[in-house]
Length: 126
Image (cartoon, rainbow, N blue to C red; front, side):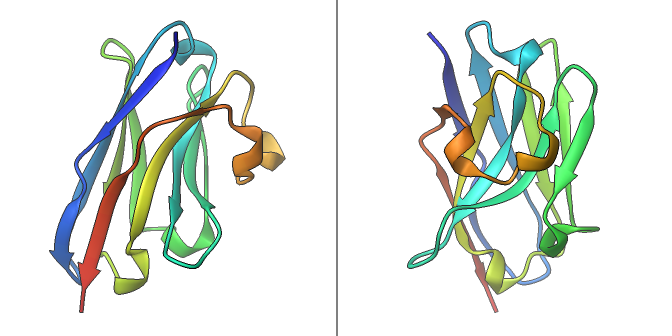
């Protein structure tokens, strides 16, 4: 059974940093496109940043370019999202997601990801 468990959310002021973690269990990790989505109140869930674990290829939203980075610890089957220079508009529930496929041009579509964590709240105050 595949499980994704997130941790690391919290509240920070604008300009601050947070690091999210997503620990994966099951056989998904090495074959996965895995990463982070977020959903703010009243908005649709959107792709933030993902990585194809096997190749290390990353994909990200323009809104986080230069501020967020994704990294992996394959021994721990854990993915990290380092978020720097946080803005109030980054406030959302952040979800770890995975699919057993490459990432490619559809990486941002949450409907194509079958495995989800429970979410962790990130709140950025101005």
